[in-house]
Length: 185
Image (cartoon, rainbow, N blue to C red; front, top):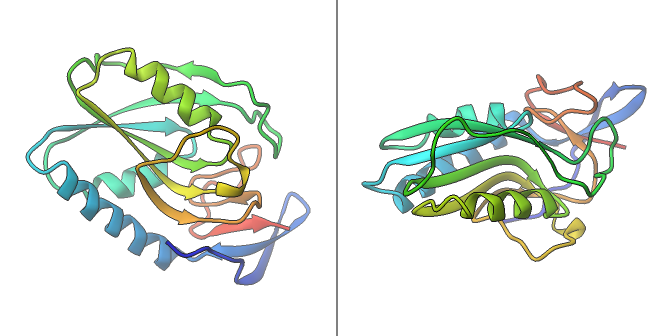
């Protein structure tokens, strides 16, 4: 995995300048690559893909179409940001799964991991429900921000410690529909 750096000035979001960090075509290629790897790792097994709302919905939709085999989906919603650009550090479980995961192969899909607190807390909570296996997949990883010992099993891009929006990621609900990923500068 190569580190990603901003590419060009593109627009203003909420009065702040934003640069393209990852272009749409790069994202598409990475999603195909992740789908292929996940398909190989889960070959012959059913997978319950759990999307973490709201940020992962676009990434997850594209990803599941790249995974070969039987794929089921569900969603959870957790939060640690509210409307700010900094994590509050408190993980709030907003929406739980709609199905029993006992004995199932779980793949948690999230948009980004930074401090690691949210994803680690989520994994620990779901392991208590006895899935057969549990893996995590994130599109973006801000390794510089890690505060807990946790790494995702599948990672799209390692990015710098910048606030990012686009491709499902938002800033107070703005920017989710952008096709590229931007960093706020």
